[in-house]
Length: 205
Length: 205
DNA sequence: TTAGAATGTGAGCAAAGTCTCAGATCTCAT
DNA sequence: ATGAGATCTGAGACTTTGCTCACATTCTAA
Image 1 (tube, each protein chain N blue to C red):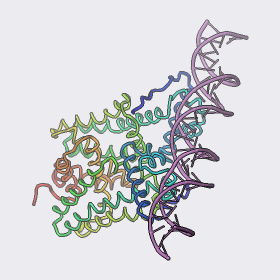
Image 2: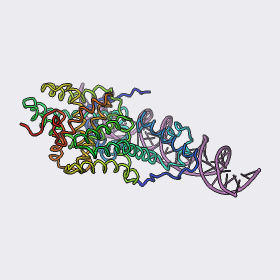
Image 3: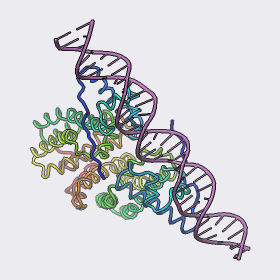
Image 4: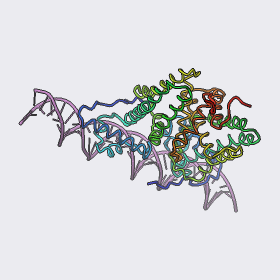
């Protein structure tokens, strides 16, 4: 059933203009995804919006899925970049401060482009995510988090990392979708939940 | 841009066989959605699987969206039914017990058909959810929860209800999708997070 | 300058999808 | 039994979409 589809670019752009085409295509893809969801993302629409012909698009992306896969991969890399600074800092702190720091970075990331990131999460579920690059990118943040939790002696760090990620993503997205834009308020509500999960009393030092 | 689409059935079935057809269509739709996601749900596929002709399908559903809307509405009604017993009981308890009770019911609901319910959530975002019946069904659980939280003197019960719903859904779905099936374990991890959110210390009576 | 490689173009094909319609079949009150 | 209305059928009209291909244009190295 599961058809094998190539998810890597057909050819690597060498000249400047072709690299610009590829960027334009990906940008257009992200914009369309954000504005109209995956239902609106057709290859013709992407090419139109990118200002290139449909032929050019297929010169660099062998099929529609490849475009989506690359968008997902970039989103994950962005997440990694947004988080890694905070996680590095957090290693030098106590659990309470570390949690706050990482939580803050996480919320900032989710708030960066909430609609697009939500849409890309749906897309990710659609793609047969055996694609190496995409999975590798996804694993980066997980690994960081797991190591951090482990260093604090949290039991089952893999499970905790998954739980906390999902829990935060769920609440933050819901709040943003509902129109909230005060990130500090969201963070203030979410922090005690995370502390609760980790078994840290809210009031104490 | 946003085309206006009729979301209510074209005609109401009167005889038994037509009611059976409608049920078969909705059941088929749910099965296809669960097995292959929204990409696999075509009107032809639904009619085939339901064992009725495509003409019969369009006799009762003026378009594809109507089928999805009805599935979403039923899912919400199911959620309401799954929750209302627990919420009623919870009214007679203290906050700690009430929270546990509602949480338990919520997890049971999410575990009932996790793939389908996740898929229907995506669908819901797709549909222009101005449809009265669907929204009304969705509001039922919210209202119940808000009232319950209000009765315990929780500040901003609307926000808390939304936060907690999203937080639970996010974590439970992630756990289930990852293959976990020990609901008690999930509940045991989630409970302290919810207690934390509500400002109840875990250890105390 | 110029050949060859890289890049761009867009009409249009094939497949898949939504939805209609004219007529066949079934049900039930009379 | 029978007629009117309810229900069912499925070929196919029409649209959309992913994708190809033959050809045009631009760039680069010698």
